Image (tube, rainbow, N blue to C red; front, side, top):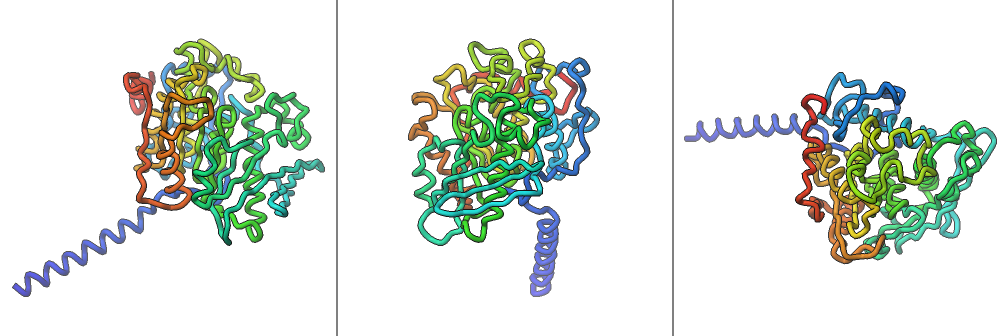
Length: 409
């Protein structure tokens, strides 16, 4: 009997060693990164001209390489696949996002963060009001796109700092091409869309937080962005294009945000690719309007997927037809497959709820917002962030992406 117990003890110990080695080799998937773009050194994808693009009627497969040669569903290949999606969105929708310039400085004084960015002898200045909680910090923070439409107390009651991003300091809401502040730094990019410029501005604001971290007590591992309507799109693009952002909350972003261009084209009076505000995008994107939308090599389920493996919560409001929330639902269902494939489904959620004004979060949606704040800004892993709430359960979303991994649609 003693020998049997000894044998079992040895077996148990060996099993523990094997499990330990396995856990060491399988590193946990990061919640956030220290750099803006982990795929900066990845190979560039092919970017065919319009007449060379294939027609893909359904939602493109986010795991399929741009050249169609291979399909990867493992997380270790995601950085370079994500970089391909980024390159496509920049090329066909918003223009190339400039990298961090060499000349940038920042200061914090009287609750104002000032960031000076100099390129080719011209300087653009960002100024942001910072509302810090009581205490020493460091504090998690949310960057509000022009304003934080979400109830501020959801953050302040949890000692989360609130930082403002003033988009007009980079580019106006209805830009005059070539005449905006960012155009003085990058005159060769006068064709860029506002969502390129604004994403760049948010990234430079985060640079400023890094440069002033000794005096401004912000926890750089726990940054969030949020905005509503056009600013909901702004938050989504910012979160997709900067991997230092741990949590993105896109509130009622509508067409050009969470909604998929292809799906929106099948609906009624909604914001389609041909009806959107072209101050926000490159004008050449108009070539993909109406029946040509199927030539777009990507769609906005992939814009959302760029946030993975970080956290994303999409909030919708089906009372406003223009927001195309049925399309947003289909797009969210498709995007969720990316997080599910990596085994981190709790990092993506959507809540589409009626019965309230535009950009006025009802109390019924507080729990999901609070849960995402708790888990991804405060590190409370006990909360449940598996959120998939909408009135569109009868919509066949799966038909748009069930082809992934099989033949082309």
